Image (cartoon, rainbow over all chains, first blue to last red; front, side, top):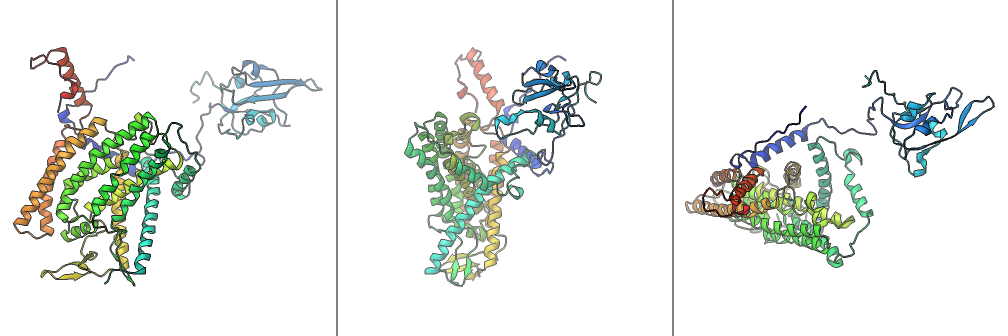
Length: 166
Length: 437
C-alpha cells in the first residue's frame, strides 16, 4: 500500500473556539473519570496470560529418576549467540554422557530460544516465565540444580506448518 | 449570646489554630492523592491503590520517602537563598487560611466562638498581600539554584503571577463594592442577606477570579513556571527531599486556599440556603437578620449548625479542588505569549470594564432606592449575565487564545509581505508580531 499524506484543513480562526473546545474536553475527561472500566492490570493478583511461544527463564527437563535429560552433547553452548551457557560434560560407568557443570547466565542470555531448538533430547528449554528478579547479581547464573528445579511451563517451538500457533 | 472572652478565648484560639492547621495539612496531603487518583481515573487507570485501603496511606508513604531522600545542594547555588526560598513559598500559602471563616459561630458554655482564626478588619487585603508574597519564594528558588532552567522558571513565575495579580484584584472590586467591606465574614453575611451567592450576581467577576486563581497557583493550563517539557521542572529543578516537598505543599496549599477563597467569595462560604444558619456580629449581638421594621432578629448558635455549615464549606472547597484537578488533566499548557495576551489583553480590560459596569449598576440601583436583597441580586444577575455572555463571545472567537490556525495565518501573511506581494501595494515588510489581532 502506498504511503499517503492526509492534509488536515485547519479551521479559520474565526471559527475556532477555545472555550467550546475546552468544555467538550472537560466533558470527555469527565466521562472517563466516572467510567468504571479501567485498563489497569492489578499485576501480582492478576497474572498476564503469556503467549505459548513466550521465551523466558530456562528450565532443564529431568528423567523420572531425577537425572537431567541433558546428554552434554555441546550443541547449545555452540549455537548460543550470546555465549551464556557453560557446559562441562562427563561420562558415567555405563558410558552415558551427562553434564558435570551446566550454567546459564540469565543476564547474558538474549532469550532467542536457539538452545531449545537445537537440543536433540529436548532437555534444555526456555519457559513461559519472566519473574526472575533477584537481590544479588551472582544469583542470575543458574546452575544445573536450579535449572532442574524450575517448574514453569516450557515454550512451544515455532511450527512452520502453523506459523501463528493457532 | 456573648462572645467568648478571657482564658477560654485563648484556649479556643489555640484549638482553632491547631485544628485548622491540621485539617489544612491533611487536605493538602490527601489532595496529592486525589490528584494522582483522579488523573488516573481520567486516563482509565486505577492510580495508587496499594498503600492501605484504596491507597489512603499513600501520602504518608510519600512523606516518609521525602524525609529519607538525600538533600542536594548544588555547589554553585546561593546557599542562604536556596534554603530560604522553600520556606518563603510555603508560609504565605498556609497563613492565608487564617482569615477565611469556615463555619457558623460555635456556641459553648463560655460564650460564642467565631469559627475563624483571625477576623482581621483588613480581610481580603491581607489575603492579597500575603498570596502575592508567594512569588518571591519561586523567584528566589529559581535564581539561587544557579541553573538556567530553574532561573527561567523563576522568571516566568514572576511575570505570570504579577500579570494575573492585576486581574485578580480587579475581579475583586465588584465584590468589594457590593459588600462594602473587606472582611470575609462580612462577605458571607452579605451573601446570606442577598439570598443569592455572588457567583450569579457577579458571574463575570467569578469567571475572572477563577482564571486568575488558576494562574496564581501555577496550575495547568498556566503552569509556565514548571513546564516539565520545556524547563525540566522549572524553579524547583535543583530541589530534592523535604525542600522539594515544601514546594509541593505550597502549591497544593495555594490550591486549597484559592478554593476556599472562591467558595467564600462566590459560593456563600459556609452558608447554606435559607436563613436558619445566618449569624453575624452586629453591634455586639449575634443576629440572624433584620425584621421589616429594622429591628434585629437574634441568631441562636448551636453546635450542630456549626457542624453542618462546616460540612457545607468543606464540600464547596473540595468542589473547587476537583475542578482544579479536572482542568489540569484536560487542558494542555498555554504558550507563553498566550498567557501574557490573556492576562493583559483580555483579563485586564474585561476586569476594568466589568468593575465600571457594576459600579454604574450598583449606583443606579441605590439611586432608585432599591433595598439590598433578592430582587437587587436578580437585577445584578441579569446585568452580569449579559456581560458574561459578551465576554464569552469575545474570548470564544479565537482572538486571544488563538490556536495553530491563527498562528499559521499570521505566518503566511508575514511571508506574503516579506516576498513583497503586499495586497496593500506599499511593499513594506510586516513582522509576524505586527500581524493579526
